[in-house]
Length: 217
Ligand code: ADP
Image 1 (cartoon, helix red, strand yellow):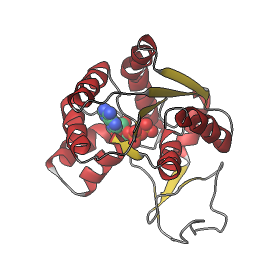
Image 2 (cartoon, protein in one colour):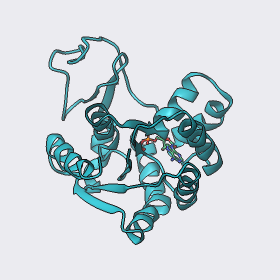
Image 3 (cartoon, rainbow, N blue to C red):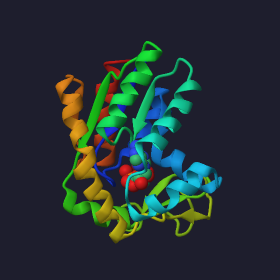
Image 4 (tube, helix red, strand yellow):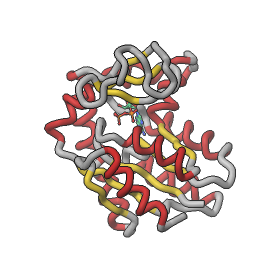
């Protein structure tokens, strides 16, 4: 049972890769972005607090995020975990270590996907997902094979995130540089950081991540 973190700027492909790795390697994917979007859809108190902050592209408070993660970890059994989009600040990384320590666990490896940021705005602005099975697509880089129909489940409804517009993306990148890049050194100092080239093809990135993860499972 191993614990992994996927790191990288918004739009680098963390979510797509984490999803695929969780399916093939039997890891539980824990994405704070997905948990928060679900809270917004469910109109919970947390969701109501987070919605506006997320739409602007700012980070949700460490208190809210840590409480969500603590709850999630309580319900995880003996499976390994891949965290995606979390931790995003040093206090989050520290509280994750404390939460894991309480149950005799620890992060095994943080995987950073390195990308050329010039392409991120275009990548994010064109993305959408199937409303039924959540498969990810892109207007230019990965359109559906049949227009208006999901390749995987044939669903015909698609959704776009409220924060996937140029203005919010710029703010998300700013937040990433101001608050999140510091955690790369956090894991590097602990000798837990590995890097993969996030500019390679999706299949190549997946193969690179998988081969590292396999050495821990
Ligand atoms: P991306 O990495 O592409 O920005 P996410 O789905 O991971 O997408 O996050 C979307 C938004 O959710 C963030 O911009 C932020 O507002 C909020 N969020 C997600 N995870 C965290 C976190 N760990 N800490 C604070 N805010 C978060």
